[in-house]
Length: 540
Image (tube, rainbow, N blue to C red):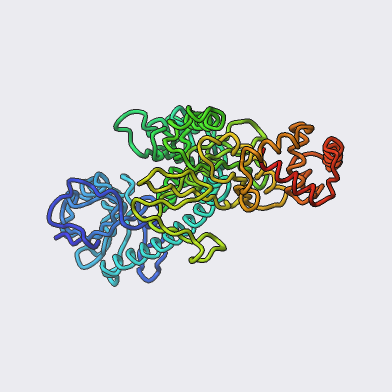
């Protein structure tokens, strides 16, 4: 009778559908043989084999009851034709045969040894003092240990990949960490096979070509494409995984060795990369988003409003990597995703800041206090049919709730400059404000600078009169001189910080500020003069 040693296995009927895989990692035959207390000895067949299960059978033909990968244990009660018996085991995919000597056979039959050697099936001699159940218990113990090692490895890999995903360049960082964890090549490919990012040692040209072809199989350009595929080329293990989304991005892997847990680690990377690449799936989508942002920041309000679907408030953000490295579309897209928007422009050229357009935040059920604000100071929640006034937001129509402006927060690895929440009619001006805020943040080494809306005493002056006064006062200054003066005043007259913010030499700053004083006929060391000029510059 067959006696399955694997828990939850079926012994009553043949398995018509093989299982997708064992619940635990395979065990190398050498590890089982190394258990000296078992007294097992390999007497025929190859030394390398992976054990997935343990099965005991005394049937003349156990083929219908095998799943593949078993160590089959038998005392040869019904063994009459060793060659046929071994052939059926090989056909069933058995990993090895353990033959128990005594009481049926005093020694392992010579014909069985010859058949195993000839057909390449490892044959183990089981001494009479070793019960089959002891062997099964040893295999399950080895599997538990292997499973524990695999879980620890996967946990460490998950933590490393999650840390990489939090970097300012998350896509390249995740690929680099994945290549390190798997000891091979990890690449992000488009549906056409174009390599967007890659890390790890490049495989030979033939293997690289095979990997590109494998990636096209899962690129999801046609219905019914598989989500993953594997292949082997010249000793290199190839894998391809389709990322979530509709643009056909593929994670392609090439490794010299394949270990237990590799598929799980790759699956974690697929999830992270799908989330990171979602805002900009490929160059085409990145270009469309960049073009949209440029149009929104330069078009007339009448053209912009239908595209945005909301009057605001909107916040324009300029961003640069803290380490000074350029940001590609995927890295910028990940920044946009962390801020909660897909409107990102990272294609204005080398050295240019990433621009992000951040829309209204979700409407909360209750207004919470801002940082530094007590609950009693927080604005009250509008009841149904009522609105709460806010000078930084457009006024809602009767019966509507005013959308809450999104508030940008610092992002690790990035320096951000943000405008105050502004209506859709003032996006172009907010773009200039965000650029100045970014320059201020870089000069002061702050992770985030947010331009504050006009308030206090300045808000008491009618905007039309304030703007007219500013135009008249600043009329002698050219645009570069006015920008330098504004930056210098915002940095409390610091020559060095102003030079950093503007990207010029400190002597250039001194010359420009001196020229401003001459043209305006004002003493720029006078606090009253500085205050008046700052008020005027805030209106432009």
